[in-house]
Image (tube, rainbow, N blue to C red; front, side, top):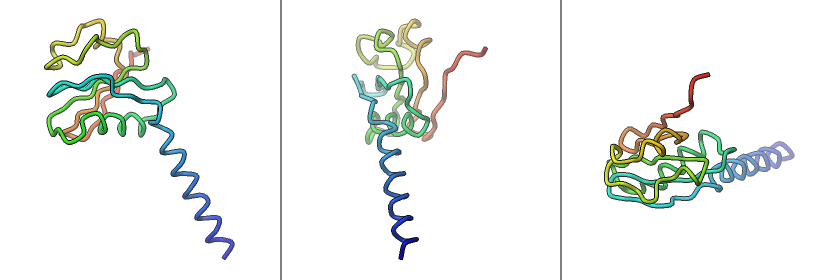
Length: 110
């Protein structure tokens, strides 16, 4: 019986940690094909994936661009990725590609 209680507690704690990983992400704007998402700097990869998927919702063809710095966000979601200002696209942390269910990180090489 104690093992069951410990397992249940551990699973519950993992669920809380997982739920908190993307709690600090918000979809700021969305067009037909592009979503603009802002996440806190400590958001983990699972949180970024969840935030991107949530931003795209039921749209099969959708790319969710994710930033950590609100000052780098475009003023609104463009109709297509190519219409993002270079200053914004170069400052993004990641892109969630919804139809491929893939997160692409955009970290600068050191």
